[in-house]
Image 1: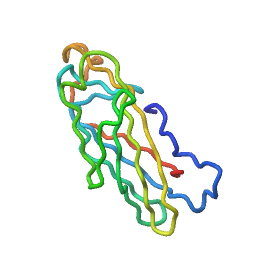
Image 2: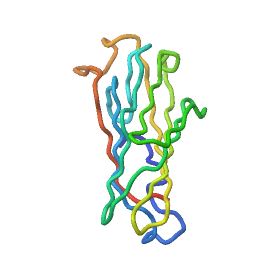
Image 3: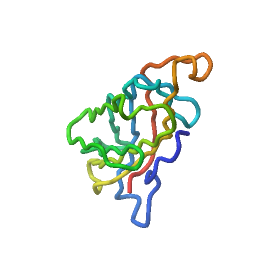
Image 4: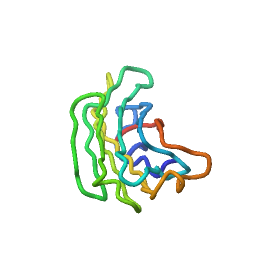
Length: 146
């Protein structure tokens, strides 16, 4: 759905040993339309939480690293792994947001996954997709982490 949840599909190792989780990422001040996250120019884009629920046993995210336009801009080792991309990041135009995460699940090897999003900062709320307004939105993924 939202671009590529990179690494959610198993690599060359034994899939039985990889974490198998449901991953949720919650954004604030955002609109999701198709594969694009929209934010209004100069409004902070916030990640309010990142969480993992294990399929079969308990799981958790152990850290998250944030990238904006291919530059590493932050790291968080503490839940809920929130981050704010302020007005200097959300300038009008197209941007790329990346998040890489380490995933731990009971009885499994430590796993890694990453997601990328196209972010479009528009001039005003009138430029958002029809019938939408900025708010809180959660994006969910399911799969195994490499």
